[in-house]
Structures are given as structure tokens and as C-alpha cells.
Length: 262
Image (cartoon, rainbow, N blue to C red; front, top):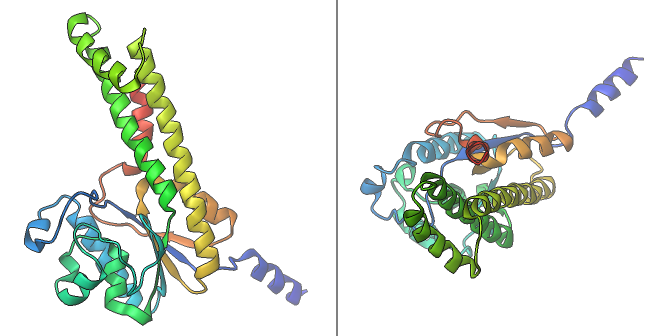
């Protein structure tokens, strides 16, 4: 009986090691942060520095041996050629100081620091990243039009200015611009949610195949709910780290937009 109970207990536990999840507020790709002192003034600074320092301690103590990043594809090592906010592997390797304060891809910084002591991967897919980014950009565009058409319902002359711009973009005549922009914004929100799920599928695949020991994932807050659901389904133990500097209700951004379109 005791053997059966022990076997049952073992089977009920996760067959994978723990995954630490960090929600990040990253810089836009166009932002350059080569001036370290100036980059300390950026609003993402507190969040980015906290994640780096927290992970640094876990890696030092060997509680994390594998790291997964959003925003890129492939393994991050000395051959990794991509540049983020003006920083790449070679530039960071030459820097050798002030790593806490450098605003760039956090897993890249940690890989440069620890090299063979850490396995660092991009847990993402470039095609999905691009499609996700375009869908999110379209949300902002259509939502902006919707707000303007709603604002100028009683001012047709002003509304015509935005209607002309929208028709030029869509390359067609639009009879009801308010409904059109609302419906398109809703559609793009749906697309964005789908791309989040598809990208999370890629993360799960990488975690299952490349993380025999404790690992960590760094990604945006919008990924969190779906990723946790998928980790639970795969019986992968995880811990969501309570990070600093993250805007309140970050993961509810799409929900707020949906409410604004009702």
C-alpha cells in the first residue's frame, strides 16, 4: 500500500523542473540605449533592472540554468548577431561593466556574462513576432479612427478629414466609418490574442525540449494567462516572479480596449 501511495504521489508531481516567469516592460526596438546614464531615465528602467538582478542571483546560485527570451529566434551565444537597442553580443562583451544599468535584451546580457554556465535561447518565432506586431499596430490605428469618428459624430466636416485618410489607407469607399473602424479594431484584437497563443505554444515546445533543469522565461504581461494555462496542462511547475516597475494591469490591456469598443 505504501509503495502505491508513493508511486501515486510521484506521478501527480510535475515531470519537469520549475519555470520562473518574469513579466517584462521592454523598450521599443527603435529606442537606442547606448548612453547608459540617459537610459536610466527611461520608464522601463526599474522593471528591466529588477529582472536582470533577480535572475543574476538565481543563476549564480544555480537555481536557473536555462533562459528563454521573447523577441527573437534561435540560440543566444557568441555567434548571435542581432542588435537590440544598439547593443549586441560583441559590444556587451567589450563593455564588461554597468550591466545592471544597460537597457537591452536581458537574456543577451546574462549570456554574455555567464557564457558556458548558462544556456540561453530565444523561445519565440520570427514570423509570428512580425505578424503579432503588425496586428497590434493595426489595433492602435483602427482604435484611433474609432475614437475620432465617435468624437466628431456631430461635426461631419472634421470627420471627413479622418474618413478621407481611412479610405486612402483601405483603398475603398467606406459608408459607415464608425462601425467599420470598431469592427476592424475588434478583429485585430482577436488576431493579436491568437498570435499570443501561437507564440506561447513555441515557448512551451522549447521549455519541454531544452530545459532539463530549472529555467526562466522573460516575456510581456499579455502572454501570462495563456502561458500559465498551458504550463498547467503540461504539468510543468512554475512560479510567477513578482517583478517591480511593471505598469498596473498590464496584462489587461486588450480587455480595456475591447471595453472601449462596446
